[in-house]
Image 1: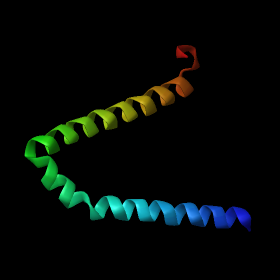
Image 2 (image 1 turned 135 degrees about the vertical axis):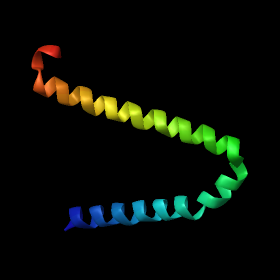
Image 3 (image 1 turned 90 degrees about the vertical axis):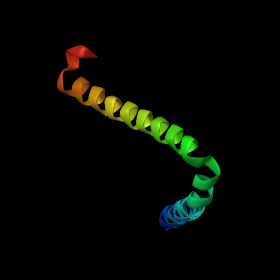
Image 4 (image 1 turned 180 degrees about the horizontal axis):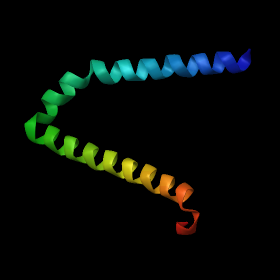
Length: 68
């Protein structure tokens, strides 16, 4: 029962954090301006690319253990 309460509390906390991020997205976007949003978009693209390559290399290591 304690584990279920803990998971529920974590879900509620994450929902609150996501709601706050979405609620303040428009003011932050206005504050950053067009140039700032372009920078943030490029950085997020780089982060997404890094995550994709990490997943690719992890899959290749499992598929071809000699590479590890």
